[in-house]
Amino acid sequence: MLNEKIALHTPGPTPIPPQVTAAMMQPMINHRGAAFTQIYRDVATKLQAVFQTQEQVYVLAGSGSAGWETAMVNFVPAGAKVLNIVIGDFGERWVKANRALGYQVERLDYHIGTAARPEEVDALLKKHEGTIQAVCLQHNETSTGVSNPVREIAAVVAQHGALVLVDAVSSLGALPLPMDEWGLDVVFTGSQKALMCPPGLMMIAASQKAWEKAKEANAPRFFFDLKEHRAGFEKGQTPQTPALSLYYGLQAALQMMEEEGIEQGQQRHRLMGEMCRAGAQAAGLELLCQEEGFASNTLTAIKVPQGIEASTFRKVARKSFGVELAGGQGKIMKDMIFRIGHMGYVTPNDVLVALAAVENSLTVLGYTLQVGSAVAAAQRVWLRYARESK
Ligand code: PLP
Image 1 (cartoon, rainbow, N blue to C red):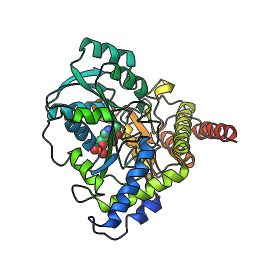
Image 2: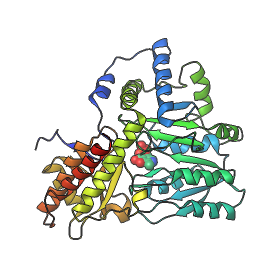
Image 3: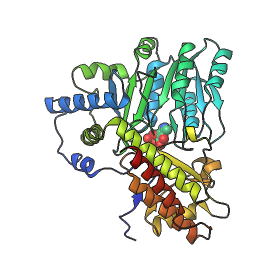
């Protein structure tokens, strides 16, 4: 197997289109000049279409985790009580971030593989009536492959006057998340997932209601101070030196997304999610998320069959069949699941390849399945979509 020809199916970083790689090779420019202002404005406008918002979207150097900190320190007063909805490892990490930042954290936990229930969020907010200032949740929990019903939760949160802060790191650009229509107060994402770029940029937007609350936000901040970014944007500048090469790449990626169309991109992700789930089930494998309506369309978490060692399985998939799969995160899930990423610069053809590698690797390791069953089931889903879209 050619070492360099590995199909990357981790749920971030994700594969990068050649157009993005080529764009990033452009020479450096004066970041205080007109050429950068033009790129910044173009990127910001294109991002508004992806966020589906009229609000300004800001681009900061940093990975997705920077979104947690930026959302909190700019829009929630220091030491305030907040509710963290935890359905997996990234929910857990946001709790850690909020505690480190000095917030009082109430939590609502769910079993791995399940999504949050809006009525339970409502009940908890009633119990703490008027004291919880923000509700923090993942749109898509990357560690379990589950998507939360953000629209319904946001409607509940609004009734209680709190802000809803949404981590859309592994969903924005792939799953529907119309920020303005759903009344979301803060939405942020990272460059290395559905946006088809390398890691290193975090993008964030906030509602008018959040900006109103920002007047009371007194948490210490400097690099992540969005007021500075807002003031800079008026002049077409960023407060610090922008990560120029990543901006070039992001501009190229957003151009491609615009050409595909936001809804068509979401439809492609729906198709790939369905193909992957149908394939896994046809091969007799168990999905971690048993609720079809909440299963993620950007990645699929699958239980490793009894008797198969998770890390050996992934090694065989990589070494013998050229596909890089992701393992489970955290103590409980490490040996329990594997994950197939299908987001960003990924096509239904790539999903067939990933499923073939899963079938081959399990067969080599002695698991009994009908070779071709997963691929055939995925093909049938694809054919159905193709017929329906005619
Ligand atoms: N939130 C979610 C849902 C994620 O999937 C990730 C990373 O995979 C993060 C936050 C953290 O992002 P990063 O690792 O880029 O800091």
